[in-house]
Every structure is written in structure tokens, then in C-alpha cells.
Length: 197
Length: 197
Image (cartoon, rainbow over all chains, first blue to last red; front, side, top):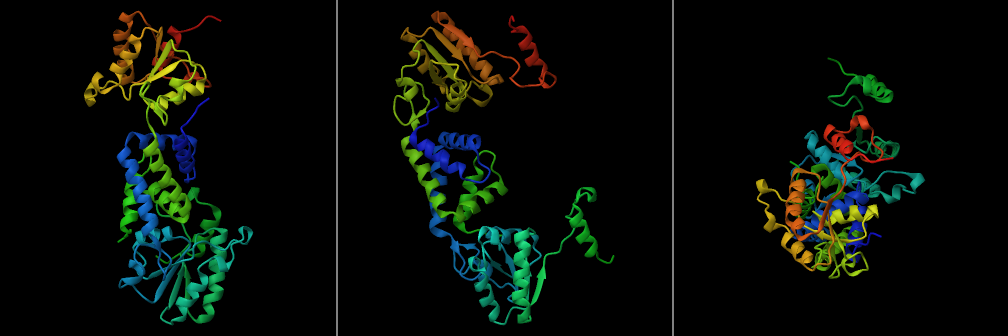
């Protein structure tokens, strides 16, 4: 019988809760950390530091150490808000360097089957931000899944009556792709959204 | 510019030191942990617990919380020692359920190019265990790499003069493999080591 020490068993259990980490990877990570005790301590400390220091921005609900976060407090366009599902989606938008406005993180998407209703998302908080009257456009960047699309539709119906422009990220063929491997629905949307050359 | 908070940057740096974890995986792990603060705390605590509780067995140099470890203190065959490179190799041997003796972890393999000489491994400690006279066989289970083979050869020359039997794990075709995909050197060893049916 393979017998692990109590604390090692506990560590393996915790590691296996991470996404993409199974029995083998957990063992590999654990033994790697055991071989370098300094890294082990540094990892534990940085986890506790993040836990202590990182919170959600009270304006956009992104992840930050300072409240409001740097995206909400810097000189970015105050007339546009990009709505995303999760804090990490802000990174994807920022990497594109195409958006200069502010953000709003919903912390999820509508999913009645999983019991996630508008009250579970930061939608009321978004509507409150829109009340200020300074916002002229809301760019909805929820994921292109059933839940993300449903959320986009729900938000559109909520925001349009306020005479605020509601936009959605374009559908189409990703850069560098082979047309033959793109699914039919995406090609259909790309044809519908074709642009003049 | 994408701007992470100080503590998040530090956590990402620590995560990236783990084997197989790059920029994207580190981000994924970090955001996963941020979404479940309880798991984050539990992981940090179990890391510190392992760091505090886990040590090397003073007999076999495997990983343990109790010294000597359970493999050294239970009623296992005292006449056979299996020599492995790393503590996790003991797991691979134990999973096979084929070995009932004791273990000795070298904590590495000879590698003059990387400056790893016999003095860096637990070889002196192994020789001391052999002095007791109770050991009748040493099964060398170092890896089948250049370094592992060199270590096996070195140990054989050291141990044989003590009139102790020195054995090595068999080379051959792994179970469930397609012969056509096995490298020539392995097939050669499998032919040399063929068994009577």
C-alpha cells in the first residue's frame, strides 16, 4: 500500500482542486516543491499575501489591491463601459489595446439552469453606474456561449431604453485561421458582417 | 499596459516556477484561487504544514513525517535494498507491488557535466547500510538515462566486492506497446533478455 504522510496527503488534495491538476500533476508539483523549500515558502506566503491584499474594485468589480482600481482611477474614457463576465476577461481586452474606456465585471453570466439569475450578477451595480448620465456606449464583451449571449441580450433590453448605445464584439473568422476549419455558424456571421474593401 | 497588483504579480511569479506552468496557466490558477478564497487559504496552509512536517528519513532518505519512515520501520524484507534516484521513484516501485524490501534514495544521479559527483549523492550512506552484513541483494532502479546508467555502473563496481548480489530492473518492451513504435535499442535489449515460454 502506498502511504503518504498526513500533510503531504492534504497538500495533494489541495493541489488537485486546481484546474487541470490531477493525481499525477499534483504529485509532480508536490515533489517539485519539496525539493526547493524556498520556493515552497515563497508560494505559501504569496498566496496569503494575495488573499490579504487583493479585493474587488468597488466601482468595476475587477481584481485590485487599491480601491478604486487603476483602470477606474486613471484618465481613461469615461463615456464607454465594457461589460465582461470575469476579472480575467479585462486582461484579454487590455491585451488588444483596442479599448480605452472603463470596465464592469459581472462575475458570471445568466444561467437559469444553474440557478444564476440577474440578482447574482453585478447588474444592479452596472445600472447604477449608467444612471450618472456620463456613459454614452456600453460594449458587451460577455463570452460567446449560450449564457454569455443570453446575458448580452438581457443587458441590451435593460440598457437600450436609457438611450445609451449598446454594442457587442464582432463575430467573425479569427486571425490566422484556415477557413476550412471554421464552423458553419461562425462563417455565417462573418458573411453577414462582411466589410467593404 | 496590463497592470497587475503587486501581490498578484508575485503570486504569478511563484506559480510560474512550478514545472509545466507558464504565463497562461499561472494566470488561470491565480484567478481560480482568487475566486475561492477558502481553497487559497487551505493551499497556503497545507504548503506551510508540509514544509514544517515533512523531512527526509534518516535511514532511506525518502520523504516522511516520522523518522524512520514507515517503509524502514515496518516488517519488510531486511535483506534487499532498492536504490532509486528520487523519493517519488519509491512510489513507482510500490505501485508495482513487486518489491517487498527496503529502499535507499540517492537524491540524484552521477552527472560530471553538471558537477554532480558521488559525494553529492547518498552513496556513502548506502555503503554504511551495506556494512551491517544483513543485506544480500541491492536492486538498482536508477533511471534508464545516461546519468542513471552511469550511477548503476558506479554502484555495481562499489558493491560487488562486498559479495552482495547487485541487480538491475529488466529492460524490454513496455506492456501494451506496439512493437513497431519501440526504439531499436530497446528491442535489442528485449531480444537479448528474451525468456523461455
